[in-house]
Length: 255
Ligand SMILES: [Zn+2]
Image 1 (cartoon, rainbow, N blue to C red):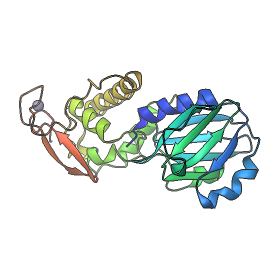
Image 2: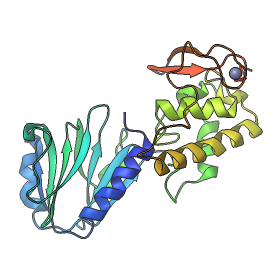
Image 3: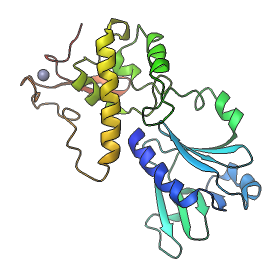
Image 4: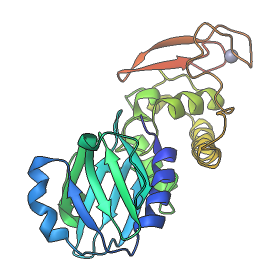
């Protein structure tokens, strides 16, 4: 699963190749093929990441929304360079005078107007993204307050409360904040919420900076059966919001 930092990293690379370029767009999705002529010769206005979504903007007010989910990936090829993935898995191709930019195996590709995207209940209503300049602390805390009776480990994965956090980030953020993932949001103190936010910023930025390097900031993700580096207690794991979550039962506060 691509979490926010990886999505921002790829969006930056795509922006360098696509922004301001006249593109030919090809879809590997039958129902989108009919829209190819309407995009012919348009220049890409911008490429942005919001949470786990890629949004590629066109000057006619339309947006291509791409979500990689578990299986998708982007590749950028120079003209004439052979593709390292089967062409039949290409779901979306941008051809520029110098590059082919290809989204392979992405389950979600949507072509929407800006207002359609904004009003879309599934894709439009994203919570603030800690890697974006428009992140609002106030808005994040306001949204958290509306989730008082849910567990924090579940809420951190809710893209409509905060976007871009996936399983690795939620586990590590809660471990460093010493908050047990089963805690109800309404039970968190102001200090705990601020501490959590501090680690949200820290880990999303660290991951972006160390994209190509070893993930040495990971302390307990997938470390069940090992002991907590802080207190020596055995790390526990359980299912939460459909994913495996990890926690130290001793130093991550349960109440
Ligand atoms: Zn511990």
